[in-house]
Image (cartoon, rainbow, N blue to C red):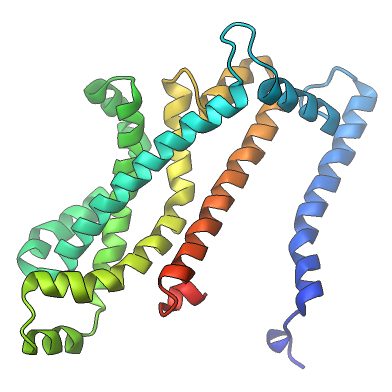
Length: 271
């Protein structure tokens, strides 16, 4: 049997999924043990016990200065900013995508503009955002919006253009107005694609958030990582990176299941 036609069964699939992660952890802890054996004060590759102690100190012991549990406070702050940014970006991207992909009079000026905006490196304009919107929450949220919304709009515009013209003609033959077409034909086709596009944009959104928090913030996961880097506190940095990765994976999984539940007929929801 050709290799391209061989599929793993369920136990084998689970083993294959876990194997790369197990290998990475094995290599890390072997390297950590070697370095700590030579120098017990080495900070580059902390042991599992050191990382557990650091997480316990940040998550379950109140900060002596503020009285807050820093780990959970940082998580809540980052998730609030990310949620607001993605929510606004999704709404803006959906409106622009519908307008550019479904209405020719709007598509003529909007389509080139969206294409240009999607090519602008958001981190390059971060100083401009801080100057315009200040160093507060608004600039961080706007960075996510500016970085994600044009990409969503461009993707949804293309999806709107791919809707079969027969559907639109048939709906108009039955008396559908422009608003009816948008609400009853175009919008149901774009909503599942919006969820899939959000999944694809999660990595970029986290990148923009961490960058903004690292430069100008007093809390958040990105702020904490860049705060402790000056002390070479890898026992804090590595768990925080792992926690961010887990949060992003859980958000991706949630959007995937939401797509399947809300739009089981959509091909992307079954993928």
